[in-house]
Amino acid sequence: MNRRHLLTSLAAPFAAPFAAPFLKAAPQLTIESYEIFRVKVNHRGGWVLLRVKASNGLTGLGDASHGGGDQNVINLIAEFFSKAKGRSPFDVELYRRDLIATAEAKGRNGSVAFSAIEQAMWDLQGKAVGLPCWALFGGKLHPTIRNYANINRATFDRNPEGFAKLAEPAVRDGFTAIKMASFDGLPKTEPARKEGTDRGIACIEAVRKVLGPSGDLLVDGHSNFNVAEGLEVAKRLEPSKLFWFEEICRGIPVLAELNEKIAMPTAGGESIFGTKYFYPYIKGNAVDITMPDVKYCGGMLELRKIGAMSEAAGLPVAPHGPASPVCNMAQAQVCAAMPNFLILELGYGEVPWRGDLIHPPEVLEKGGLLRIPDRPGLGIELNEKVAAEHAL
Ligand SMILES: [Mg+2]
Figure 1 (cartoon, protein in one colour):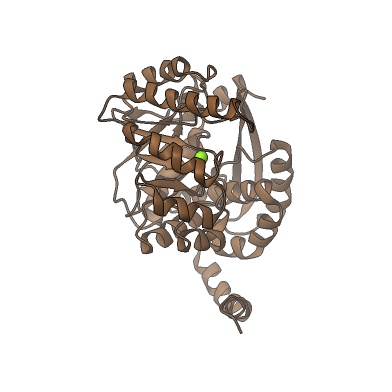
Figure 2 (cartoon, rainbow, N blue to C red):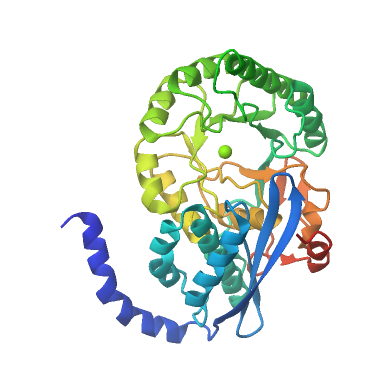
């Protein structure tokens, strides 16, 4: 019997006898209903937020954005919710055991729907016992979480001036780390491909000037390159002293080869669902820094597990997620208790009302620091007035 089969065969007989006494001891709280809130953001799409209601009236939030088709995600939330309804929000592992294979089979839509309900379960748990989520994940190691400003999603002019123009307010707002993906839309054929590569590098150099020599500059390659191109671009980017070069190309063996050969740190893994697929990615030395996303990886507990796997391999974790303030807080709550947390992603400059979508509003201190609240659960509520004003 291989190890995976052994785990599966162990799960069934043990689950039933252990589940019953636990449920008796857990607070008598069940998941009852849910609402979906959709808000319009920009040309890159909107945000989809889930609010789950429990039997005692408590509510829990989850982010279901950027799922590769919002309506498909919403349909799958309905399907998965029918399985979660009537259960305790404390039964995250039971929810995971029963639905993770179905979610995986549905691709990105499934992982986002699955992860959103899971986030809401943790918010409900925290509120039910009067503790912040970070306390449920091992306690607060980091009172503040450092965010980097991803300026890519709100940069319309894809030239050096355009990127520099959005980097300037990010620096004024106190961010000391900026991410960009200036190789997006790289043409497939020459000579346009070379011109696009040159322009992408010029954009990075322009943002480095705005950020100054001490700021941290992050570049996402969005898997636009092959190995030879990746090596060449990495070499040309050495003077820009990158904090990391993300997703240069696709495939674990290829990433491992690049990772071995280039000097600067590499990062990636945002699309990977679950520990099952993060394990070969980490074991294969694909990157120096892992980037699970609470919306794609399976939720807050899965993020914690992936963080632990990364820690065992000696890798820092920098969660991906340029989505709503709910996504940011769900990740920050887990990261606050994560020994190997490095930095968190924030989608910068997309909409001026971003911070007001939640209550209390999202406020970042100098340095892009998010102070972790001590309120129960995620420590935030949806501002329904703002959500209604920008409803999609
Ligand atoms: Mg990325």
